[in-house]
Length: 117
Image 1 (cartoon, rainbow, N blue to C red):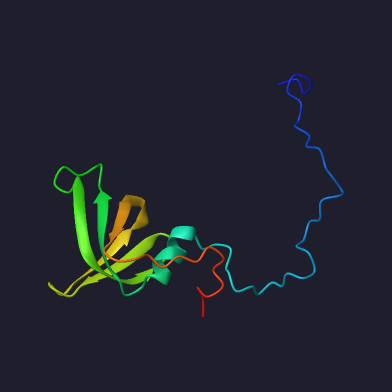
Image 2 (image 1 turned 30 degrees about the vertical axis):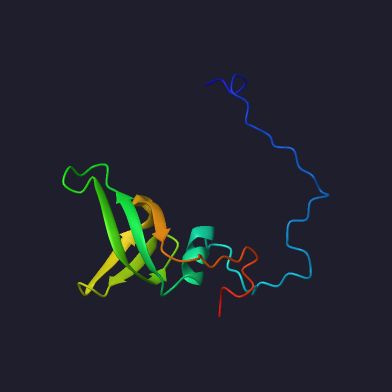
């Protein structure tokens, strides 16, 4: 418009906040920042049999579906299951997963010290 009606936003700056991590944190840490908590929990439970409850809201045929199988791999946005009874393998998008049911104790380590190789 006329340049005075809409002002460009300004943001306060604080010079006391460091822009880089403290010196004791290296660029190569054992926990990649991009990995999610659910992914880490699934990795800790690799090899366990689970039931995965998923919903597909745009599908009339597959509105709600249950997958049973063994956790083979997990990633930030997916889960890979194998079903030894049928021989089927499933690649599931985490977007559609409602919850996962375990038949045994869930391995959980909140500090992730032994999660990664």
